[in-house]
Length: 268
Image (cartoon, rainbow, N blue to C red):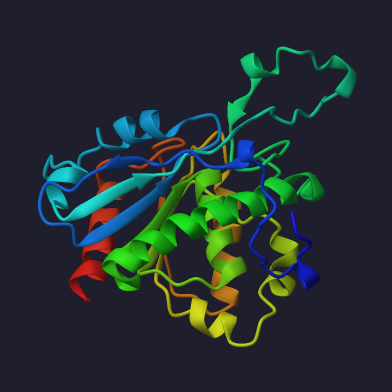
């Protein structure tokens, strides 16, 4: 990858053929295409599995996402399969069977409970994922317009999505983050140190949701994400639920996501 001076975003033009992304899993709208939601899955999941699971969710009126949003195209980008970092990781223990033990992840990390550890390990593939998300979003912006695109993510997908927006200054209609955190949080100000970037990003509405019984990503990590976004002036809507685990809370959480997206698309 190209070096990024002062932590600023520089598109990666050095990727090999093996780094080229697979096209996202796509759910076409049931009506005329007017809007797009780009939804990033979590570590260890994949685009198809995540899409099928999230589309099983229902709001308080027993409606599914595709019923509520007939004009939305849903894109589920695919994280590359990588050999995961472990807390007791030992290079000598690795074998040629990496393909059997690799998992889909947007970037390498040791623990989602302590996401600020091993920052140097996270950076190379995190920046590659930024490139992937950027290219996907730009294509949709060219089709439907910036305000008609919502970026969303769960867990590591949330972390990757919000980092992409902050690091690049790219604007979309809004951001939805579930069960997430902010990677490289201590370097946020230097990453965003581009004239006018913070002012642009702060105009974008953000919805964050987390459940207190999340055993994968502690709710404190989501609260830290909210705090840091508010510190730079972003408009953050925060929904915290007592139960729901590491997932979209149903039905109240889904009600909130539906209302948030509707407000964005109806306000255009």
